[in-house]
Length: 291
Ligand code: ASP
Image (cartoon, rainbow, N blue to C red; front, top):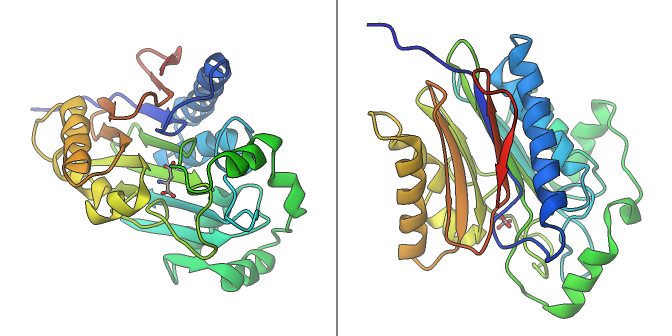
C-alpha cells in the first residue's frame, strides 16, 4: 500500500498571548511566513529550507520575540536562542545566548551544515559566525520600544512571541525550526528550550515539532520528542499536539506546540490565551491562520 504525502508547513508566533490590537498583524505575518515556506516546497525544495525560510520572515517581524523585537534580559540586553533540525538525517544545528544577530536561524543552519557540533553559545558562536561571514548588528537594531516596555512592566513575565515552523516535503522528509529571545527579564546566560533538540525543536523520520511557552517546563517534558513519538503510529497530529500540552500542563507549564507528520498532517494546541499559527499545503496553498 502506498501512502500519499502532501507537502505541508505550519508556523507559530508564540504562545503567551498577542498584544491587544496586534492580532491581525500577527496573523498576517504568520501567513506570510507559511507562504514563504510553501514557496520552497512548491519548487520541490527540502523541508529544511522551507522551515528556515519561514522562520527568517518571522525573525524580521518586530511583532514577535525573535530577531528584531526580542525579549530583553534583566540587564536590558538581547540574547537569542535558535535551532533547526532535519528529521531525515537527524542533523541539527543550534545557537544559544547569542547577542547582536539579526537572523539567528541562519547561524543555526550553518552549524547544522558544518556538522561538527550541534549547539554553539556565546563568544564561540560569534567566532563561528564571523568565520562564516556573518556580521554583528548594532545591539539597538534588535531592541523595540515594546520590548523595553515589557521589561519595565513585568520584570519576570512569561515568554510569548517565540517563532517556529514545521514542514514535510514531497519526499516525506520532516524538519523543524524555532527562534526566540527567550523570557523577558531572564538572567543573562539563561538558555531555554528552543535550541535544545528534543525540547523546543525536534524532527525525525516520523514528524517534526516546534514548541513555545515556559522553557524550563518544556525542557523537563522533552516536549518536542514527546510529540513526535506520538506521530509514529496513526495518531492524528492534532491529538499528538493536544496530549503534549496536557503533559506540559501536568508538570505546571504553559505553552503550545505545532507539529507535522510524515504524510503532511498538521497539528497545533496550546493552553495559553492565544498562539498565532498559519499553515498551508500543496493541496491547499492559500495559508490559513488563526489565533
Ligand atoms: N520557550 C521560550 C523560552 O523559554 C519562550 C517562549 O516560547 O515564549 O525561551
